[in-house]
Amino acid sequence: MSEKTSISLATLCVQAGLSPPPLTEHINVLGVTSDSRRVSQGYLFVAIDGFHTDGAKYIPEAVARGAVAVVAHSHASVPTGVIHIPHEEPRLALALLCDAWHGHPAKGLTLVGVTGTNGKTSVSAMLAHILKCAGMPVGLIGTVGIVGLSGQPLGIRSQNEVANMTTPDPEELYAILAAMAREGERYSERPVVVMEVTSHALLLHKTAPLAFDRAVFTNLTPEHLDMHGTMEDYYAAKRRLFTSCRTAVVNADDPFGERLISDPATSAETWYICHTSPMYQCVDTHHAGRCCNRVYAGQIKLMGSEGIEYRLMSPRARLRVTCPVPGSFTVTNSMEAAVTALSLGVSPACIKEALQTFSGVPGRMERVPLAEHVGFSVFLDYAHTPDALENLLTTAKRFRRRGERIVLLFGCGGDRDPQKRPLMAAVASQLADAVIVTSDNSRTEDPLSIIENILVGMDPTCNHVVIPDRREAIRYAVRYARRGDMILLAGKGHETYEIDKNGRHPFSERELVIEAAERYHPKQHG
Image (spheres, rainbow, N blue to C red):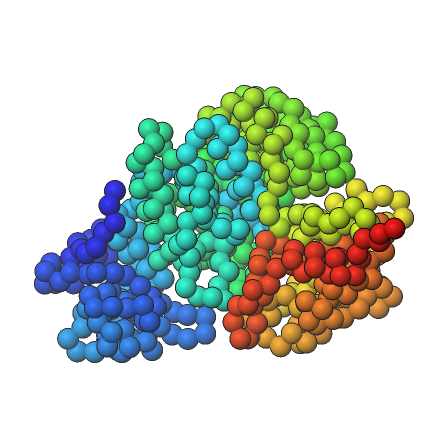
């Protein structure tokens, strides 16, 4: 599979499923983009509906830069002499065109899509680790980065410096899949690509051209309601993944997961339904002509900081699972990864061995290495929803020693769902011993306004302090830490940057903690 350099406009439209304009067989397209700044001579410009502005405003700029054709709403104004391809859903057209431009790269790949509010990154990373241990060529697309089949990062990412998208935009996504498909030509076995698929990606048609071989549902809790409006609309967006998959793996402990199984809009032929309760028998049944495999985790042991252990029971395999990643959510996450791997043909013995060696995901309950004399521990975690924060704090409480305090530092992102802010404060008030409220990617919002929203839900009797500058807040936490404290820095996890109204800036919580510990807690000699 080679990289395309040009294609006739008529052929591109046909391959994308769009109606080709007349007399365009001899007009060559040299690229497709929705960013007028990236247009060059011979490009096709797609004027999408933006969140803050209408892409149609940039049609004159795109034409001036050399666009030979424009995809836009039928009512859009396109200069005379430039081909106008009308489409009432330009975002969908963009995905279809990018997929066609790259030669429908997913045709040579086995796609696994993982969706849900929390757990997407952990399940994806666990599954990729299992498949890699099984000797299968596997790529990974998600929050913590893009990893090719060779295990090396792929440097294809959005040029928008304030974007931290889990599922890349179509221009990047289909280029990534094409790169993985080219890598896959070296292997005799069909490559697997594990992809985190967000509700935004589904709602905005980023993955519309893709047919997923496997779709995994983790859970659904309030998040992104600034975009979706209601939980029903949020669920409807997530459900889209299961209208284009062959096999589904669902966490049925979640009420939306159980609902998904019986949803008439879904199309999976085979369902693996995961429970962490032994009240369900591990049996094959049929529902509406579809095979339903009930799988459950029994004899669950939460071993504090040593991880978890349980017995996975399925109609086709039974195995004792151990994983060194702590927390009850690891049971569900590893269970879904294991069951998905089983459905892809990986042996139970290989799955067992792989999960035993899974060291975790960067920024997910990640311990910062500190000298032993410091006397306290610091963990980084991506928890940025009320449910994820509750899971984080509950996990921490389970493996802390008697008398140790849990000190939580958190903030809430700007230009994101404001409804969750007081809810996160309520969780923090209830479960942490001390709370530091600070900033977290304020973007275009005023950090102090975000903090005011957070404090609405804070129990005034809770031991808490407000330090808007996150850098200073981290230093404060480390400086005044007591021996035995467990400090949780929530919200950023793997991120090594901070986003404010001036853009993206380097920001490493790991480095800040280590520097502060060396400064405020030096080793005493003599």
